[in-house]
Amino acid sequence: MNFVTIDVETANSDVGSICQIGLAKYLNGKLIDTYSTLILPQTSFSRQNIEVHGITSSMVKDAPSMYDIYGQILKFIGKNVVVSYTVFDQRALTKSLELHKLPIPELQWVDATVLVRKTCQRFSVKGYNLANVCREWNYRFDHHDALEDAKACGFIIVTILRENGLSIHDWIEDSQYSRNYPQQPRANGRSYPSHITKVGDESGQYAGLNICFTGNLSISRADIAEIAAKNGFNVKAGASKTLDYLVVGVQDLTLLAGYEKSSKHRKVEELIQNGLDIKILEERAFLQLINISK
Image 1 (cartoon, rainbow, N blue to C red):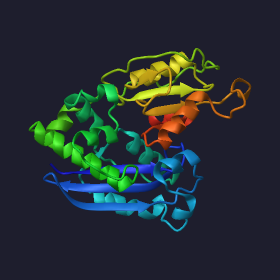
Image 2 (image 1 turned 180 degrees about the vertical axis):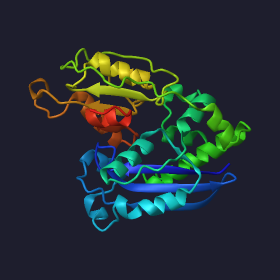
Image 3 (image 1 turned 135 degrees about the vertical axis):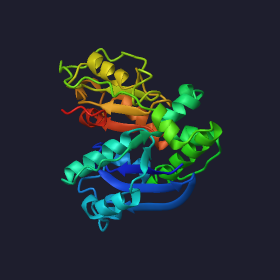
Image 4 (image 1 turned 120 degrees about the horizontal axis):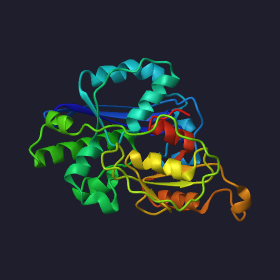
């Protein structure tokens, strides 16, 4: 049961704006080593992201860049399987390396939520996010600290594999899924109707996660909902405590009754302030997350 878990925190809605990385190494199911550092993302911090993880620009002004720590990351991982909780961290690391013009290493990535969805279907109602699942086993951790989240992911993997009598390689062989999304989404301008809901494809890479869209998108609301559902997302009409992602488009200020953000956006920010784990992404960042170039 040998593997390395990874988690990253980002400075803003760009998935490549990594400002902290945490890695935890497991040998025979035991935590044997860790690596964590703040990272200078060379971009601005958004208020929403600061409210989530507490990392500010002043905290990283003397931190190394991704270019500086690239070799240390690869050395720590070695030949181990790399496990992330959802593929967000894989996408983020890949994008960050691309931005720094660094080679993309050939790593064997596995999404831990695939295992959780297959063995713990009771979370389908309240959500598969990391905090919910850890709460099941009374595992306490400092959520949104990258190293703490990486260790929490490792705890979940070891616990579930042992309970089900599986090895990491048994799981890998059983957890392969197809990344099912269109390569060229059609752009249709205004994104209404906004009430579209869809049940996600259970074989999609984000199966079990809930997403909501707000504002005007470059892709029609129907098309982007279809893209999200094919990638596993349950598309929701409104913001709620079960939400995992909110994708924000351009807002028509004449429709916002004096506000600068939609009611969905404001509701999600309120939920985040109350401790819920919801990511806010711009449309481009969402398409990058599911590996569609735009």
